[in-house]
Image: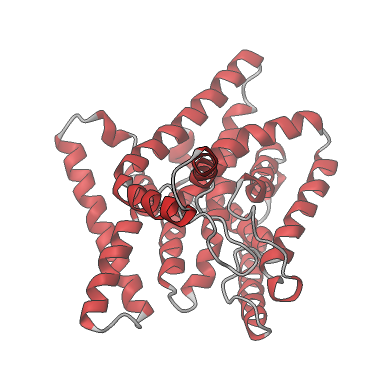
Length: 344
């Protein structure tokens, strides 16, 4: 039995996490709050499967080869979708250079930075990179591509897990202050959509592999903690909103612990699935494909005068995304196009 087939609970929750991200971008009431656990969940599970294989390799050459293989996989996924989003990228490129006042070396270099960090916001929540590569959600793939090798480097420099954890908790503390408590401190949120924010989640994934005791906890304890953490997580978001903050903050004091317990629960969950790969690929596809459904659904609902219904927007985006995946699946099944394999 392969590693992937052992953890069908992860396949289910990855799909739910992808749907949660759709809810964020549709501003679906309540669901947009829960959806904030989506990316942290992705990061922890990616780290878990990475280190489950990586730490099982004894030779330095084997580990290096696996890191390269992992990064190539993420890079091909990113590039495949970058091609899909070329029309949006070109549109943003034209807008950005007009905004800059023309094409020159300085502006080209600035654009390149924006391209790599496509979803960066200032303290006022304004996107200052204008989603330069056409799809701001690509920040997660780029952050993972850089973040895993960076985490390995930091781990090499700081081999003590307790010291490393303490330092990463401090980094996480900054992102909590910059996001959950932005209305109080007005810290810049630059870095929130980068590998720096994901380091704590890569660390949590590493801990699950390194210290198997987390997976040996009783199911009752895990379920109890998950329910408690979810309730506190939602309440914190509402309290933050009532005090002048965002109702679905990118990062709160409960985001890391809640997503950690959620991952433990998903890892322990064993569900029989006839086509786990189909479900797994659907979650990746929906996350990457969502921008086109968002554009289509918003324009249709705006034409119909229903643009204020966020739940309707969410439902429409989800339906179009699922239809898009089934079309992709059928085309891939009937053709031998290598490019399609890189999309999930």
